[in-house]
Amino acid sequence: MIEADHHGVGQRATDTTDDAQASQPAGYQQDYVELHARSAFSFLRAGSGVEALVARAAQLGMSALALTDHMTLAGVVRFQAACASARIRPILGAELAVADPVFGAGARPAQLVVLARDAAGYARLCQLLSEANLRDPAAPIIPWAALAAQPEGLFLLTGGHEGTLVRLLQACRRQEAEEVAQRYARAFGTEQVWVELQHHRLPESTGLLQQLVGLAEAVGLPCVATNGVAHATPEDYVLYDLLTCTRLRQTVDQPHRARPRNDEAFLKSGAEMAALFAGLPWGPAALAASQEIAAQCQVALLQGVCTAPRVPLPAGQTPTTHLRRLLRQRLGGAGGHESAAAAAGARAGRHPPAGAGGVFSLCPRHRPAGAAERHPRKRSGQCRQ
Image (cartoon, rainbow, N blue to C red):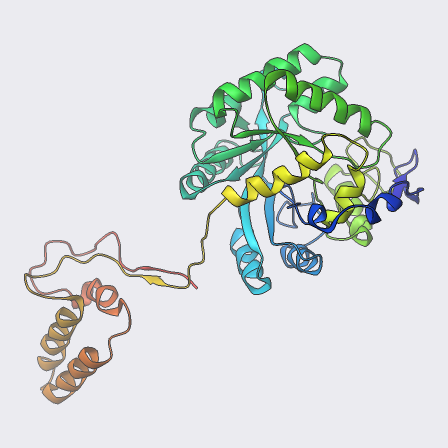
């Protein structure tokens, strides 16, 4: 492990948990799914691309992986394509900058993780991000009230060191942290909120985890372990730190609270995570909870089929027969190309591509004379690979 000195420059620290890794049963090691991972699409907030994260997950034998970039879903299509190639199930979400009223107006936003459980949740997440970016493209922030207004289809994870609960606990504001957790539970329901536990081998890590678990028990919320991934491998830490300095407009020789303090925010295997949580009585349950959440997240953008549009057709016509009729009308009346029209119509009837009749029938130049709508809103199907 690399641990930063007082200048924020990485140094090698002693690893105290390697022996515990070998003692974990194989099944226990495989119960973990990473649910909080940023990629290069989190501009200057991560040190690895989407493909590198997926390749690392495949190397570790992971069955699923979540992408939770900071205030964006820009990487999800590439992420799903990479996961499909690697036979890994993708989980879609985002790390949101949320204005929590507990910190007052103008305060630094908290970071909460939201995962899309289904298509409705993904659509809601898209809406939240779009509205935030339209309000303030330079520094988009989501008000807590907007997030809580429609929580259906979403899972809420309380975030890492920039989450509201961690920030309040570190400021010795335990009662307020408990009230915030209760507010989360009221808005989302106790089955959709998870207190996030991260162990980056920092001096305060174990004590903070104990406080978070105690708080979760007090308000009746479950816990889930994540590693708050910002880079695929430990070697990518140097690039991640450099990008962080660029974002903060600091040189690498200048200390800053927002710089990573060690190289532990990499994508870890189930065995490595089991080693981190081995001595904690609630560790196995927190690791297994990641698999429980992952199993409920079912959003697929790339389907492998072409969904044809619905076309208003004359009575007794199918998309294929209607297309053939249009071909004969247009080609047959242009310069006496009756033979070409007949051949094209025959080909359309014998070998119609799936859904092609509906797609081509919507093209304005092929619409029959006197059609009421010259420019329909929906001109083509949504083709997905």
